[in-house]
Length: 342
Ligand code: Q46
Ligand code: ZN
Ligand code: ZN
Image: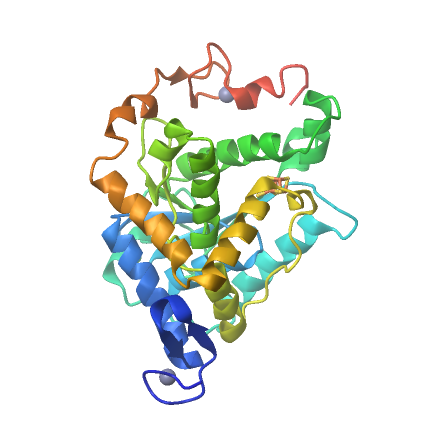
């Protein structure tokens, strides 16, 4: 298979685009696709300070790499969940994030200092960043927060306590991650929180929500969740890229990531949905992309407009942490710790 642009050996064939590309053209193509999504869905501009939620996995590290290559002002946030799974999952994933930053600092990844005027201004010492005295304002910063060190319990421990040992820790984990990411973005003055959800993730979530016609969730699903009082804007710049494209991108760029999934992800319904969609994609290339992008177009055209009410339930500030919540008194995050001294 040859690259459609230059005739060199192709490293990837993307059947849904009828496009095969060599390593050089593929590493240019991915950032160009991401840039298109950022503009199309008005995610952010070069003047925004973006906080990328990094997990050590391929998608979030590839996203961080792409945003830096494109010249955006992007820093990382790693949340240590205290998950071991018999192979030190959390410790290993943190090491991958740290190694990524080191390779940017040492120039191994070949991300030059950005000439992008917007990113330069977003990082200038006069900007509202409380940590703008970093030695080199051009270099990305990795913020890390350990949940066990901060709150005294790992995610499996909190979940074990509040769920009385029943079920997986995923809902508690999701709640804690959302709260802490939002808190960080606000406290450190980032206007945007970016996550590495790819098209496979989004199509699987859409499939699950459609199976049960969860209109509230469908109305909220999209590449951008706008900012609202107390909540940072959330964006998914990889939403039009397939998971296999992100794995190939990391391989070609030399980005080392954690291959193992979180030990609690096995058996998740989203994985079963991904398998079903992969089967469909095998028979009909582009099916996944079509499913997701047609949904976004239908939403743009007003499908689900009647459900906007569900987007803005009555909110007030949590009595303890100040984040917006619909619950009276404490928010769901703070209620996790009511009987715990933190
Ligand atoms: S990290 Fe947390 Fe996931 Fe692990 S415990 Fe479940 S939710 S599976 S994205
Ligand atoms: Zn080529
Ligand atoms: Zn709270």
